[in-house]
Length: 95
Image (tube, rainbow, N blue to C red; front, top):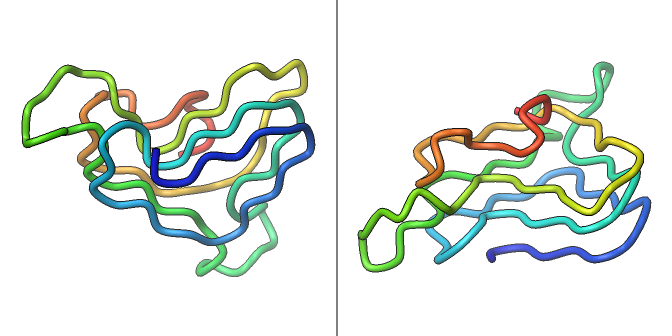
């Protein structure tokens, strides 16, 4: 993973994870705030592009942004394109 965060209530406002072996941004925990909220600046987003393609080989696994192990859903607006997993973000509402 390019960026890996572990814990509840994690916040990641603006970052770029490009061309990593697995996920671009991977967060494990509940209640995360990833990227900008509705009133934030346009530059306050995370970008996860072209992740999950080790040695240029597709296995349909790598996401731009992946948040898991949560009971309170994460919130935020981000950008993810060209990742190996066509879903781009999990959960999908983050992108």
